[in-house]
Length: 334
Image 1 (cartoon, one colour):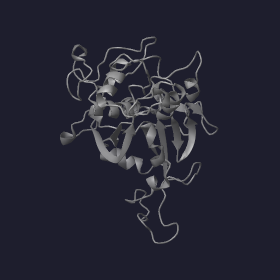
Image 2 (cartoon, rainbow, N blue to C red):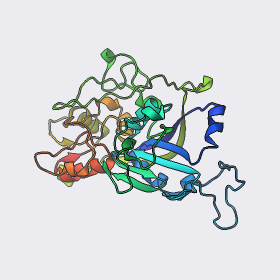
Image 3 (tube, helix red, strand yellow):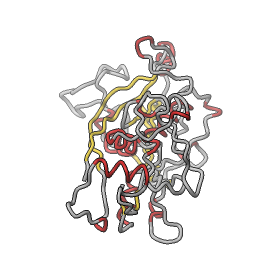
């Protein structure tokens, strides 16, 4: 098993002082987050929304020394007394970045183009969606089925720095081993062989990463955690040594086959996944080329991994979906 280290970042935009002041006096205050699917444990932990800087201005923050010992800003949904309404969409890192680019300054009246979260959706630690399916508290009439109408996207949570997710340069320079910020990086023009799924990375649109001269369109990366990424394989793969080299993984993910032509079932996340991005960049592969067998459109429902005529195993919308795909295929690896 090959292990990698993944850096998870909060990606936020600078807010003008007047805008922030206005937010502080609205009730409840929405915090809308979109991104990495494997960060659920953080956003379902009550400690993630304990008041440490007196955000609500009530003079209570940090460890209080008396019951309830902490000032919880996001009371368990539903609650009319909560200070924060924290909505989290687990859709994949790059997809979260796209949500931020598209909706960081959205007109609420036009804010509608959000899909149901591919892995999960939480509102103050309570799930409204799981594996692409809306739950009992969801509101299907609202963007993405969120129980509370989101005004915009404030934060993208990603497994890698922003520059790793943004394509650069020209399509004519695209090559499987391009590195972030090199011309052609992230610009693989090839789509899935039997569908129309793109492998290109994301655009920052009008946003920028110029933090030394920041403006209202500047994106900030803040490191919040280090976690491992692992390549997993079905026992049927049966490598004699039980190990696989980085070079073999390069061949598998770029071509869908081993160097000797052995045709394994190479499962992947979609190109908007930070898991795919972090793993491929660690291997020296441009993530837009780390497409494995490159079949089908992105899919979010675990049931689609079951063997049969509708079976799918590439462009998985969540890590849980990919795990099921590898479990199902006797020669699965991903």
